[in-house]
Length: 382
Ligand SMILES: Nc1ncnc2c1ncn2[C@@H]1O[C@H](COP(=O)(O)OP(=O)(O)OP(=O)(O)O)[C@@H](O)[C@H]1O
Ligand SMILES: [Mg+2]
Image (cartoon, rainbow, N blue to C red; front, side, top):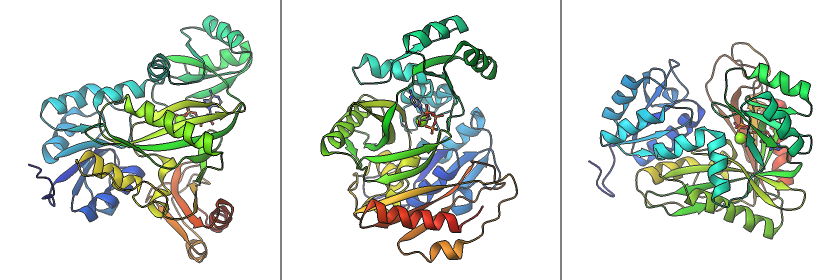
């Protein structure tokens, strides 16, 4: 049983043992926690850094019950799960954070959008499209440019398609056959932003400084901290993110993805109920990393300082360049750059655009940090 301030041998159970589970493990161990993960791949990224692992599918009820038996607190590194099983774990008396109800809401992008819209949080216009005809109607309503998105299971833009005419709609319905879809107006944003928000078991929230996220091929490639935006926009983005996360249940980190429109308005794209790619720089750049903060939040410890401890930081993802066994070259060169850190996730094989690691560089300005991070990225190959 957990005694406040007396922990040391308690165990955190994480559903998923990928790079997020790995960085959570690396944050939990120095606080004296043990970590166990469920992950289908032998020797998962989390297991490689000291987490125990149950090798099983994330939807395996028996394995998740085993995980619960061995853990004092349960959490997740991915939202594509069976929320009903998580409810069963709560019924067994194990705290699951964030709450299964939050995971259920967020894993259906359409329901998530509807929830926020009804709560008065600004989101891009969207509509359900049960068939092609509804999609063609939506395209008219959305002035000829929209995204068709799968409601469930999407990541790194793999469930999205931009459509501008009836032929492309037909193509999207073929590509996403058998999946529930919805349509969203294409927002010609001026920037994409993100705010990491921590939420305690008591529902108190704390925001990290707003960052700019830069995407290519729908994948996050760079994160700039702090976001080069005005004070008003910073306040607005922070307030929208805090307001949205306040409406959810359960503790932990939440990654709030935002659009800054050409008119200067802030819209929510979506929320991830977990540590997030747009918070990786916090390991080097903030007083408390998002990973330590998540551990603190779910175990009932006080939240740490969310502010930047350096003037600026830039994170660049190391995306796989080919489909092959993982071979890293140039680590020596990349690490010769000042104030530059390389994180590798221990994944093999390398696949094109697979997230294999990331680089964070800090500096006096975003420009300086970005030049360092980009130089190091060019010196590495994977
Ligand atoms: N309504 C929109 N208007 C303009 N661009 C959009 C819109 N929705 C999504 N995008 C673009 O596609 C990217 C990925 O979209 P989304 O977040 O829906 O996908 P995802 O599969 O959940 O991706 P991730 O795992 O990176 O969060 C966004 O970051 C943005 O660049
Ligand atoms: Mg997204």
